[in-house]
Length: 161
Image 1 (spheres, rainbow, N blue to C red):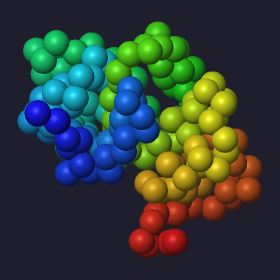
Image 2 (image 1 turned 180 degrees about the vertical axis):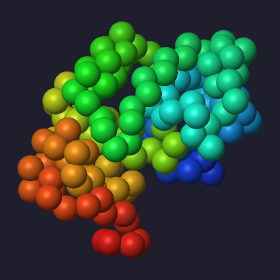
Image 3 (image 1 turned 90 degrees about the horizontal axis):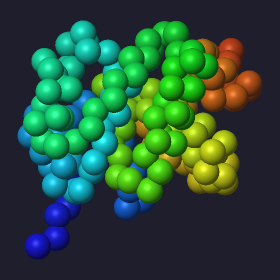
C-alpha cells in the first residue's frame, strides 16, 4: 500500500524523500505525517497562536517522533532563530523531517535560505519553493538576504502575483 502525502494540509510542500513542510497540521495530520516515515517535527510557530495545537509536543511524542520548537516571532525573526533552525537541521542529516509553522511562511523563508546556503541548491530552485507560499518583504527579506525587497511589504500568490 502506497501512502500519499497529506496535501490537504495548508501550504503542504514536499522537497524530497526526507523533507516536507506545511502550515499548522491537525492531530490527525500529525499521524499522517508519521505514516510517511517522518522521524522529526520542527515547529517555528508560536504555541499561543489560535491555530496551534493545545500540546503539540505531547502529540508528536505520542506518535514516536522527535519534536523541536523554535518559536519565531513573525514580526521579528532573528539571526539567532535561523541559527537554531540550521543547527537542528544539521542534526537530522539523512533523516526524515517535517517543518511547519502556522502558514508555512516562516518555514519557507528559513528553508529557502538553508537550502541555498547549506545544501547549495541553485537560487532559482530554492526561490521557486518559497515563491509558492510568498515573497517576503521587510524584516523577512533582510533575513534571507533579499536586499531589493527590504523596503516593500510581503507579496502573496494569487493576490500580488
